[in-house]
Length: 197
Image (cartoon, rainbow, N blue to C red; front, side):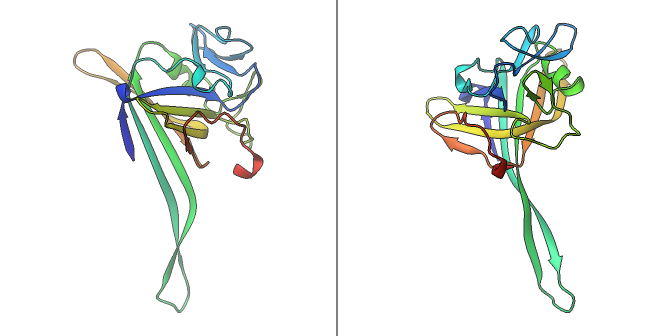
């Protein structure tokens, strides 16, 4: 697990779809839309098309980023033997982004559709089998360096809002993927392949 303060990194969110129609946004009324150009997806932009990479606008008011990489193991026992085999079933990467709450974008993406991203201008349903266009890509760029942690094929797993006594609120959005992330000196903007799914 690695935790970065907002001042130590910049975060960029893109869709996994490279088509120009894959801007994700939220209207002032809270409707999620996927439209052809930046700004037309809604009053608030959430993600730009893949390929824009870190050339897009960094998320504003980020207070912290938590990167966690874990593995799911299964114990296999054999009849007549005392030994137990630990078999790794899958690896998962979780990115939790915390920001000062300033609009309804993250609420709408989590509650009104958009957790799985889009294909062209259509929302991907949670009931569909994942494709190379499913989900979002998170680029975490470390300040003062060229290191970029690109987490590919993420779905929105959770969203929480916290309010303290001062009335200031923060919100956290949690993204999760089973695809191995890449750490390079530039944002990874190449398409996923079917073999990586």
